[in-house]
Image (cartoon, rainbow, N blue to C red; front, side, top):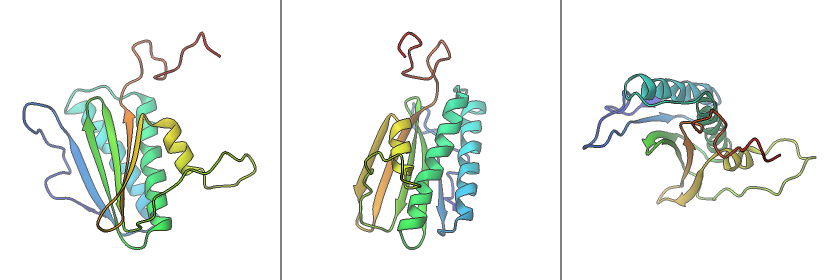
Length: 162
């Protein structure tokens, strides 16, 4: 893994508080655990340096999304990939660039299917999801909210509704 110079500690840009970290990976399964660690460290910095709350749910969801998107890149795209984590208006944008031009498609739900649920999971836990073709490969971005609602419930969950 190679972290991009100048981005590993986050940065302040303009009058807004923007933090970002970028890392390149060779495409090995061991990269997935390293990327989850990078995400955890980044979120810890968001809390300690920028003073923004990061719920336990958000901490877990960002690591899950990083893991799923990077796993897909390693399995389906030859060569290296790039991970970018960016704080943007109360959310973390998780972006993975890879060399495969084929856009991912979530499969229809199938309780009998073993595996291949990663994209379904990402789309279920994120507030935003986009995939764009790039000159070489594609860029996949998923957004995860940092904080749950003020009552401590998971964002979007209403206890009165079962």
